[in-house]
Image (cartoon, rainbow, N blue to C red; front, side):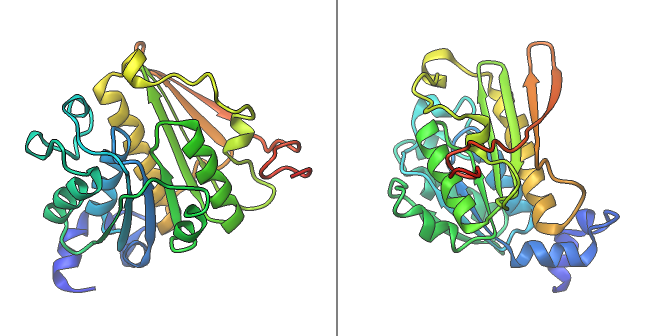
Length: 248
């Protein structure tokens, strides 16, 4: 690690239990971020700023005017640009030391195992159950940790999965097919809410990659921003889960 890197990351290197060793782990780490919208924006910015060595940035969509209320990775002059390309512009300006790879085709169940096999951790910042279920299945199959978040209206949630046998997975939390899911485009979302949840996702990713603290494995955080009230629930593994259960 050179002098510029030591200076750039000095404030987190000072943290007890982190140090130069933790920073070196981040530099060597590879992370796939699925979705570069409201949640993916703070995730990508904080992971790049923290010095994660390689970020795979996956989003098939383009920047739209309606995104800019909450998707702080993008700007007005980039409307119409693919979100992955817009993200690379912003992150390269933030930290040119990080390797950035754009993944612009829509993720498929066939493509996901290949991508997940290239990384040490996945952050799911997508906005639909189809993608979340596919990402979860790929992570569990590859034994890769997954950090999951969601936000709608004034409500958010975040958790993490180790990907290891015996622990829960995303399908333990949502065993149905998600056919009744709601979207921000129809019900709305408060802009700072996605920033809060995305920041926690980034925190969990850094903790898991660096070995700092205790990850949210087996625990679910729920936020009601209207009253700024948090709840924490245990998330046990479901023996009947179609992905990680004993009958899978």
